[in-house]
Amino acid sequence: MTTHDIFSVLNFSAFRPESDDPSAIWRRRFPNRRSLFLSVGRNALTWRGIQRNGQPGEGDVLRGLPSELLGQVILQLKDATEDGQCAVSINTCYVISLETNLSRRPGSEEIIKTNPRSVLGARYEKGKRYAVTHSPETNSSILLACDEDNIRKLETQLRAAGLRVGRFCCGTYILLRHALGFTNTIKGSDKPLSCLYVICCQGSVCALVQDEDRWMELRSRTDVYEDTVDAALELLAPFNQKVTPGMEIVFVGDTVLPEMVEGLGRLFSGHKINDLSQPNLLNTLMVQN
Image 1 (cartoon, rainbow, N blue to C red):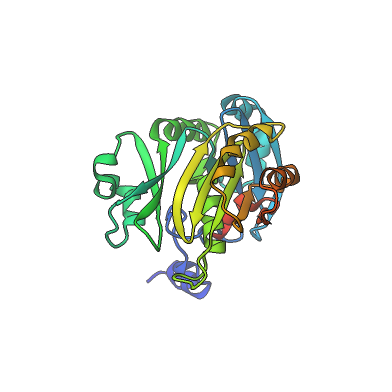
Image 2: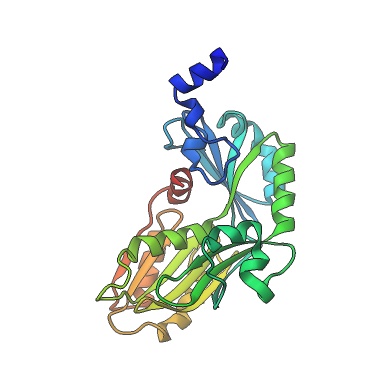
């Protein structure tokens, strides 16, 4: 045993996960180090520094092609991080769908990341990266599929700019899981929850109808809105026929969107609007997971 080994035990660094271990939470992978959060859409790039204490730092929202914007702000991005470490949210070139009868073998939600065919069977498509969330009450599952080519292209661009991607995620999918986890806290409750989940993330929209803990219908689209939320509300209008009396509307945005909450109040008049949005919610969830 070397002096370095002894010191690593004394300061607990020997017990920390490796920085490239995706199973470990972000702040344990990069303790007391500044890192970077990037949110990439078709025509937008959002960045925010993450300080050594895990709190959000400075950032900006830019409009234009991300590949061109990277070159314009790369000095700011590098200055916001140590060792170029960044996490990336993909907000385009993905599909979120509601599926039934997917394999639920033990650990399938992790297995799908490395061996998706074993979970998806005939639904598997080459050239996709997948994630899945199973309903605890029924045979329904929420399935995320992202284009592999888009991820690899983006990773190459970031590497060429001197950044190192420590994690890829889909912001809409992360926020949907957050909403489900926040509201569905008691499995098999005597009062099962009926609600409409509405997720808005960097111009993308996802809506999920839950009827007494059963996932009934899901609709997801990317690149729906930019400056106003009118197009998002128009997309949600058909769900007025799906919302039953007493059903709650649960809204989560990647940032605070009062105009969206007001619009939902008009669209679903008489229904309670539960707004779970917080400033910098998406990158906060990334740091915590």
